[in-house]
Image (tube, rainbow, N blue to C red; front, side, top):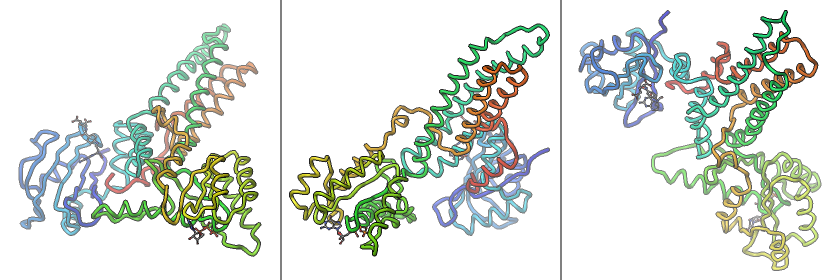
Length: 452
Ligand SMILES: Nc1nc2c(c(=O)[nH]1)N(C=O)[C@@H](CNc1ccc(C(=O)N[C@@H](CCC(=O)O)C(=O)O)cc1)CN2
Ligand SMILES: Nc1nc2c(ncn2[C@@H]2O[C@H](COP(=O)(O)OP(=O)(O)OP(=O)(O)O)[C@@H](O)[C@H]2O)c(=O)[nH]1
């Protein structure tokens, strides 16, 4: 059964220099040919561009460029036409209406990419990376998504599957000869294989901590006693970011609250309001809450007030900080009016000195912050799992492999062994989409933007 021909605006809504309307499906060429005055698109070659006008009866709606992609040589692998029109919302609306009236329907979010997936342009993990790529806001997000879209994760999963399939087939072959009690696959070799696969899977699941941090920002807390300057520092860091963004002419962007980009890595300041306790009725409560927040963080920026804190106090704070065993930056704030003895003590403790209110040494602070988070996997270009769904499937694969190992030790029968191996294969297949359900696909692609 032929799928509908679908249409959507591929560029952002609103006024732009150019708007691109995408059409995909079996009726695309015939449909657009009917409203386009210019070269005959049916006889034109794929990957050519044509200038002409789009007409609704006798009215010229716009002068456009048509980009022609003939299936299977297109993004969706169907016939695709992109109409580049003048970027007026009115023109765009008229063009889409016209195309709908000729028999296309509006595309659902992600439907072009869903078709690309269904037609084998890429697997599910790669399709999901397309959405991540569009959403990427900094170097690390971009790099992780690009790597995944280009098949980094998919290749690793494919290798894992191939090894398992090989063994599954051995075991299943033995099943066919069950009368004869042969062993095509040495149980020791099988165990070795499972261990090595589990090692690979563990590396992938462990990378999710980093992947999650890349995607959602590294949970960071600015801590310190009341009045240490936490809010002042957070605002200074955030405002700088906002200033950079609004300096670019023509961009209006809502800066995501409480996230700063430091050289391509996002740091998310979690619930910083929670630690902004002023001179509380009961200071102890405020301090406890601060400590609770600190324990949830991946990184702590700890501020010492170099005007008001006492030496004893500082020793206590640092001792507590060390005990937490979470990467931290020790910062002496209020450098502009610091007490000499305090600064000396902190220097011995390896602190960095800033003035939050004077915005002094903030660049040093950022550089140190970046150093603090280990991004080794990132540097080496190793595959990083950034997607919760993939993470869960990997864990389920791992569980199934544990059952295989257990089964071998318990000398369970081959049919049960084969079943557990097939479970492991099943969960790997979920990642790349060999195994999937309509619900899952709808769920994934509905989160894409329209036109993608
Ligand atoms: N205008 C436009 N820009 C875009 C896209 C698009 O669909 N249209 N893309 C997507 O959203 C991305 C590019 N992805 C694409 C991938 C494959 C093909 C394609 O036509 N592939 C054919 C021919 C390859 C060739 O000529 O070498 C093929 O694979 O057979 C097009 C876009 C980003 N930029
Ligand atoms: N001299 C000096 N004062 C600073 C500096 N940074 C912050 N302050 C002042 O210290 C006071 C407390 O700053 P806040 O940013 O409100 O401190 P906080 O840690 O968020 O305070 P709580 O919300 O009570 O936890 C304010 O009066 C700031 O102006 C600095 O670098 N030098």
